[in-house]
Image (cartoon, rainbow, N blue to C red; front, side, top):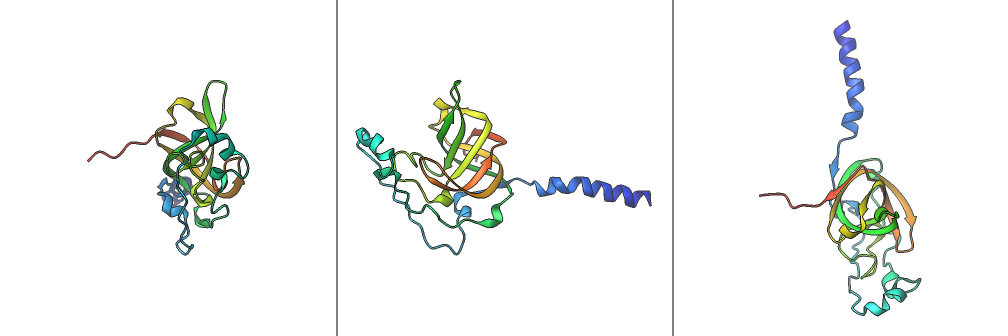
Amino acid sequence: MRRVLLTALLLTLASPLWAAELRTLNWQELIPKDAPPQVPQMTPMHDMSQLGDALSEGGAASLQQFPSAPVVQEMDGQQVKIPGYIVPLDVTEEGRVTEFLLVPYFGACIHVPPPPSNQIIHVNTELGVLLDALYQPFWVEGPLKVEHSSSELAEVGYQLAADKIYPYELPAN
């Protein structure tokens, strides 16, 4: 009888660990399989003197083509790991980015129109990332929420509270 109780107790304590299994995502997995094709406009802005106008409401780079793209509801609550580039929203006095948009390619939301909302993750973190390190891609880990939000740069389909942020490196062969 004690063995049965002990086994039941161990299974009860271990079940949250199984539920929190980390899932490595690619950006395509954030688009429902039955969603209509979305081909983002990735024409770069070459005239940097127009950057201020482009970021203002109605500017060329601010015209997000799919601001309410469908999301994958089954992703809600999953512990995920996803690579991407950081677009800063909030920077501390020490130069650490603590709120940002995670996007699948460099320059999204700033140099080209924002990707569809289901290809942007709004991230909050206490860890922060140094502002001068944002040219490189990062892995971001934490619980993913399916939740729409708006920022001055784009509409967003997912939220993530980052537990870990570290530079992306290609796997060694």
